[in-house]
Length: 497
Image 1 (cartoon, rainbow, N blue to C red):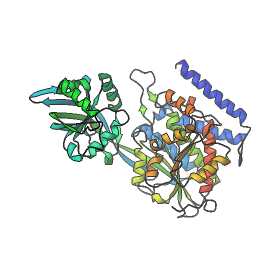
Image 2: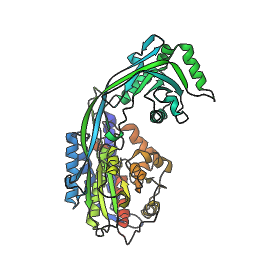
Image 3: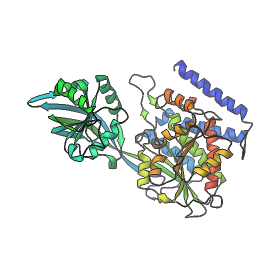
Image 4: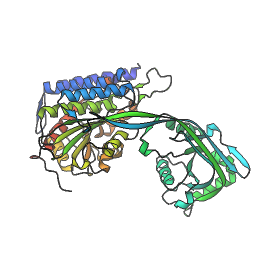
């Protein structure tokens, strides 16, 4: 292991040692926690993160043996704390099946025909992708739309291959819009062969999707020089010049496109895991704790000595905090309201597990009065400000802000927290009207978060030895106090919409 990682580990152990020296009595304005209690939480989190991010769990990729180990560990942990199955499905106790499709690109071709001349775009200057086993469009008319999408009339692209100009960060949304308007394929024009290489690296690995979301979209990428070679330099440069004008509109091209892409497909059966701590007053609502358990398995580069992405911070730490919080709530209970604990699958593939959860929830979604997501939590030291992801989106603002203030902590960079609103499982719940938030020190400070993102995010060195537990423990205690209040009808009445 290189010296950089060794130094990081040394810093991690030093931070933990410092936390222990300070924790003879950890206090806030409304609670004091003993050193022994602090140590017990720290020990539990370290143990669970080390287990979930161990070599044996193999990176927790959905549909693998690592998933089986992970789900058993979560289930056993909740059972031992007094939880029961929360699936409300006797045929599937604890595990709610999530059917996925794995698709890996295998081959493609892009051919442009102008008059009688056919131009097969070289592999170095093109790429093509579909989620289906085979997608083929033959000799379809082409229309140049540049950087337009919403402004394009449906009749301009219906049944045609739309040609767009690459616009990083915006092109994916434009492709979605144009496919919805009836384009049979989309060719995105990039600048250079290096861009083709980057696209291939980004799209060529295995992808997991929900069958309900599969649209079989046929996407191709070609270089500007390839388009120039096929259409002619003058015509292509004229199109680029016209695209700069304020009166630009889609332009039909004197060319036909044949685009083919093939992929290797297989079905993958995965699972969400759902536990329940029953409340004393049925019908008074439920609180949901959730964290995604999945990661990537192997994700390092070919030839790397260590290719296993253990996912200690992302998201063994979130699962560990959720489990320890669940244990502590069980000891403090029973509460009036039900408490559900949800471990979601395939978050890394596009929040797929939580999408499956809202499609077939074990209870009516409107009965969930609050949901708390735990994701990538073990990066901040003690004393870090709190990131409030979801502030301003739900009726939870007042109780959350009050709990933060009573804990003696401050809300951190709100702009930073807002950046992650749509990138975590809680977003899907919000779209269904469930009050869902993430309260985390990991997103309360730019420098703290960026250090993790730059050095370990989705990399093989996201390992248990370098997690930072100080902020995560403070977050756990904050949630414990807040949820204990929300879970009782005497101390929290659900506001009317």
